[in-house]
Every structure is written in structure tokens, then in C-alpha cells.
Image 1 (spheres, one colour):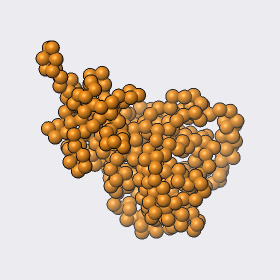
Image 2 (cartoon, rainbow, N blue to C red; image 1 turned 120 degrees about the vertical axis):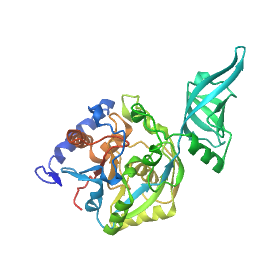
Image 3 (cartoon, rainbow, N blue to C red; image 1 turned 45 degrees about the horizontal axis):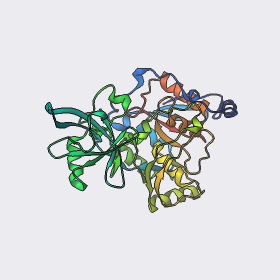
Length: 380
């Protein structure tokens, strides 16, 4: 274990808080959340085994270079991990549009990324090139799976697939590819291995088009070690949408509008979280998706069963009412997720943590390494 002490467990914390206070005195700018990330730090494949990835344990004044399998050593008996059990669908499809015209039969290759289901059974989707498909035309993805374009709005197409239910799931699993984030897809195409790698071992509620990536580090051995330590685990569902990759386009970050995502906290999870808070145990979400969901449900000061759409935007100044820490991967510069972790730890402290990660060869983004952020200190 490498430990990087400063002048005490809270050293630099006061100066970092002062720096954050100064930044709050003026409008928060997008540039406040920027940092230089070398291209080589972007992971294109996960660590194997999953729990062999690096883990940077960060408190207000200490940094510890660890491995994910060491996570139980940094948690206390009674601590509660909140895990997202959403299941990623293979939402990338490649198909063919056929059209009979004056020049005979013409075909065009069409790429589709399914974004989110709609109440009427259709799917909002990105279609490339959209101009190559007319209203009412069919795109054939496989012998079994096809979709008809029913509408276009805000640069997205609305597709109705020819299958529903289990038949749709089976056909999609065969024809589709995992919707890797743009920064990975730009480097390599998705393959069969991603159907395992880009899915948590407990995924069960189908509907996400992006993975809750902090949870990708968990394997059976780590789960057993956490249980032996006396760490509790409970599951919530947030179907991660493609909006998680949308860039922030406003200079004043407080005016940014988040994309809505559907989530659910069942009675058992709500009871476990509430009990942990009453008993003084720490509630630590695994991933920003789980954190955003429980903080949505806790806005009234108490947490109970909850279901609906959340577009909660967490940035510095946010008052956390449910989460006492966070396990998460390392995020993109100028993203809503770097703003979220800045809200938890302080912007100046997060930039310090990220400087350390870059200098010490941590791997970034969805298939990268992890951090355990504990704003009240790292002592287990």
C-alpha cells in the first residue's frame, strides 16, 4: 500500500475549501471543471479480473493507491453499498434500407443507436444518416429484426420495431452490439467480448443504453469479501440513458439541463438506506447513477420507495442527504459527472485527486480504474 500523507488527515482541506468558496463567489464556469488528460489514459478494455483494477481511496487530505479487491479494507462493518441493477441492452444496430424508385432498387446502410423507449412502444433513436430514411420506410437489421421510421423530432428518429417482448429481446441480442461510449467507439468497434465486459454481474432489469461503470469492477470474489467484512448491499434501478454522454454546452454550468432517466427504489432498498442512516452507518453508492437516484428520492429529507424520471443535476453547493461517500470511475473533463464529484469532495480537491491519478497512470472513463471518495475521511 502506498500512502501519501500530508501534514495530517485534514491537511490542505481548509485551503481547498477556501478555494472553493472563492469560486462560488462568482458564477461557476465550464472551464472550472477542465483538466488536461493524456490520450493514453483512456481505457479501451477493462482490467481482468474485474477487481484487479486500481482503486484510489481519497479523503479530504489523504490519498491511498490501492486495488479494487482492497475495497473491504476501507469499509466498516455496517456500511451499505447501493448498487444499480440496470441491464444494458445491445442498442447499436446496423441495417439496410431498401427503396424502389425510378432507378430501380437502391439500398443504403443505416446505423441506429437506440436511446430510450417511449410509452407507445416506439424507441427514440439516433439514425445515421437520418436523411437516407423517409417516413414509413423499413430498416432491416437481421432476418428477424426490422424497424419502421414513424417520426423525426430534435434530430432523432422514432422507430417502431416489428417484434415485442421476449421475441424482441432475443432478436436484439443477436443483431445488436453494446453501445460503447463515444470515446471508446472512436478507437475500436464493439465486439462480442463487450457483451460481457460492459455489463455488471448482477444486471437484471433491462433498459439502459450505458453501463453503471463503477459496478463493472465487482466480481464474485469481491462480493464474498464484502459480505465477510459485514458490508451490506442493496439494489436500486436507474436506466442510464445516452444523455449521460451529452456535452455541457453552456458556459454558466448552473443553467445546464440534464437529460431525464427512469429510476426506481423499491421498499427493501429504501428501508435498508433509512436504517443505515438511523444507525449511523455510511451509505456509499457505487456509481454516480445510484447516487443521483437516492439523492432524488431524499430531497424531502427522508428516503422511501420511489419511482419516476429524474433529471437531478448535482454540482458544487449541492446538499447531500443520503450519500456519505461514492465509489466511481474517473470522469471526462467539463462533464456533469466531474461536477458531481466536485460537489461531494470540493472542486479544488477533485482536481488535486485527478492530478494524482494522471501522474500515477490510472486509467480513465468507462473501462478504467476506480476511486473511493470519502469526504469525511478514509479511516475504516
